Length: 179
Image (cartoon, rainbow, N blue to C red):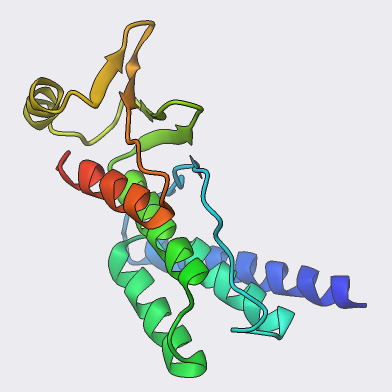
């Protein structure tokens, strides 16, 4: 029975997306399909039960964060969750920062970000909106950043932070410097 409710929620989301697409088409706006950048970092991101105990509400906020296309929308969801449940705990703040990184990466049309054993790998798409001049400057001045010698579409970032908050801050700062 609970699963049926979740399926209904997903069905409603799809309906809303289709309705939004139709309205945009009728207004003469181009259909824009946003492909969110997959970001795989070794950080714990979740909404603790002590903060939101109701699973349905928790899923609602995960969906809201998942649907954010930019940092302003993330701020709006953060304000809502703070208004309803109080000051966000550490793990939720980490989730929010991860969503900010995903939004920036998506806007830059980065293909994926994956943290490995020794570095974070940023795969750029052929359509990446990275200012080449700025990237070249970063490659010259920041010795932690280099192009993968085996794959020129991959940046290797040796961000040595083990603290999740600092690691996300450094990665976000790097991504913001590409624009």
